[in-house]
Picture 1 (cartoon, rainbow, N blue to C red):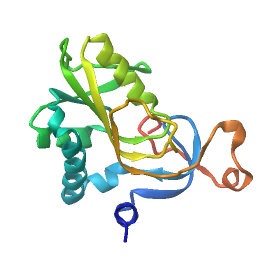
Picture 2 (spheres, rainbow, N blue to C red):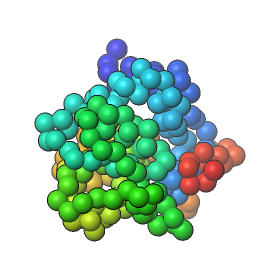
Picture 3 (spheres, rainbow, N blue to C red):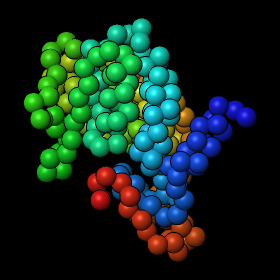
Length: 191
């Protein structure tokens, strides 16, 4: 069994890979949804996936890990633990991604952005803008699941544990067979 198939089986066994009709955080529609929190609730998987990301960036010595709330927080915190560095998160306030709760980035800090799932990369782009505004440096991006089909290459130092072809559609392009299924909105922006 390939590593990709092994990881997919972990997602299926933990109920983290859902099938149906979903509206993603990006606003797109898809027949597959990755609820990474369901797999990351198990310490053995959280540690294993965090180590994979940490190993990829360890030699670059990030100063801080930042994750967009809410999906990336658990994974980002554990990556920070593995790398022994400070860990913060950004969140939406009135629809805008911000850093608050007393967190900050300092000028010149090397920042690793960690996210659970990317489809369009919109949240990660917003975090990259926050890093830039702070005059810090985005060192790289670590992602558990890249479901962008190659469309969300956001940084030249981007690592994804697993890349999956998971079709997603704009509102006006939904296939009839998907449109016939009741919509679910499990993402953090909707619940």
